[in-house]
Amino acid sequence: MKDTFRHQGKRQHLVEILKEKGIADQRVLEAVGKIPRHLFMDSSFEDHAYQDKAFPIAADQTISQPYTVAFQTELLAVEAGHQVLEIGTGSGYQTAVLCELGARVYSIERQQELFKKTKLFLQKLGYRPKYLCFGDGYKGLPLYAPFDRAIVTAGAPYVPKALLAQLKIGGKLVIPVGDDPQIMTLFTRKSATEFEREEFGEFRFVPLLEDKN
Image (cartoon, rainbow, N blue to C red; front, side, top):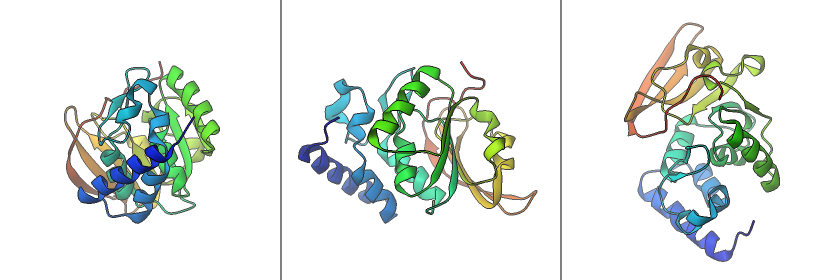
């Protein structure tokens, strides 16, 4: 669990790359600059941890490209104290970014092996999401709704109605929609029945699978 000056230097270089690519939210950039991404990856990929690339993790999943994490987080416009629903805990890297922004994170992972590993790992690093569970992301977490924000970190063939229903009025959902590639989509809840939809270009994610495994 080492985080050396070399790692820190590489992180600052990554932050500069993200700035050049258009990430402007200072709080998001600071979170990326602070979180030791190399610890979230298989040690054989450690040297590549601060490249702007996605890498494989356990259970045939990936740790998203830093630009994608930063882009989704910037779209969310998270404020400290926001209750945020995360679909797809994965490696826990996006969870850590949300925690750094002061969010109260409720996260669902459908791969049991990954869920167990990430839960322990986040605790070791000192990140304390409000609630982590093994479950079906398509259903959201009605027990803890409504949420200020919701983020989906896998490609959804369609937008789960449950996730929209669990947003507060004024709440936002960021979700990559489609098969391959996906279109990054932002929904803002305007009223009980109205949602504004904005699209932000093509991205590639592993698929969001239904049911637990």
